[in-house]
Image (cartoon, rainbow, N blue to C red; front, side, top):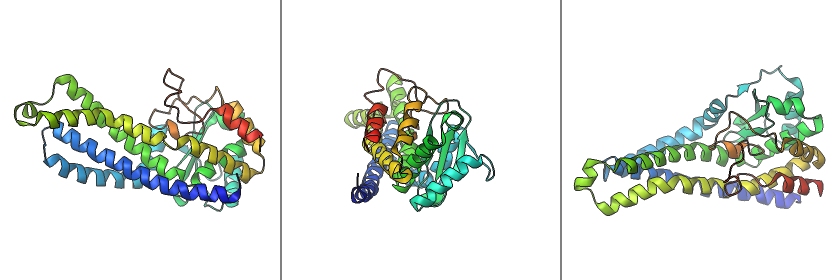
Length: 294
C-alpha cells in the first residue's frame, strides 16, 4: 500500500467514522425511545430519548476511554516504569508525528494489546503482561506500531464511541427481552397502540444486533490498514508478522468482553460457534501472509 493510498484511507476512515457514529447515535435514540414507550412514557419517550442520547454521547466522548480502561482492569505505568516499552512507544509516536500515548498494562498472561481514546493527544495504549513478557523487541515494536497506527488513523475515535454506545444499546435490548417475557406493561395493554407496541418491542430486541453489525462494518479493513501502516513505521513487516504468529492461539484475555473485543489487536475471547460469523478481526493467517509479502 503506497503513501497516497494510506493517506486516502485515513481520510476515508475519518469520514466513515462520522457516518457510523451518527448511525449509532440514531440507533441509541430509537432504542431509548422504544424502551420509553414500553415503559409507558408513550410520546414523551421521544423527548426523553433526545435528552438521554445527547447526554450519553457527550459522556462517551468525554469519559469513554476511561470507562473502557476501568472495565478492562488496566493500570497506567509510571513514567519510569517498564523503560523498554516506554522507549518503544515514544520512538514510534515521534515517527508517526503524534504525541506519546499514555501506556497501560493488564496483568493477564494472554498476549494482546489495544488502543483507545478520542484523538491522538488524549490516547492510550494497553499491553497485557503476557505480551510484554513473550515478545522480542522487533515483535513488540510491531504490535506497538499497529496500535500507534490506529491512533494516527483516528480509528480509536470510532472504536471507543462505538464500544460505549453498543454497550448501552445492548442493555436496552436486554430490557426489551425481559419486557417480552413479562408480557408488557399494563398501561400499554390498556390504552397504548398495539402496532406501536409491537414496533417498539421489535426495535428494542433487534437494535443491539444492528448496532453490533455497524461496529463490525469496517473493523476488518481497519486492521489491515493498521498492519500496513505499522510495517511502514517500523520498516520491518516481519516483526509484526512474528508477533501475530505468537499471539495466535494465546490472545484470550480475562478482562475482555464481547463489547470491548473489537478494540484488541487479535480477538481476545474464547472461540465459539458464532466466532467466524461475528468476527471483529480478519484471520491472523491472512494478516501474516500480507505482511510476509511486503
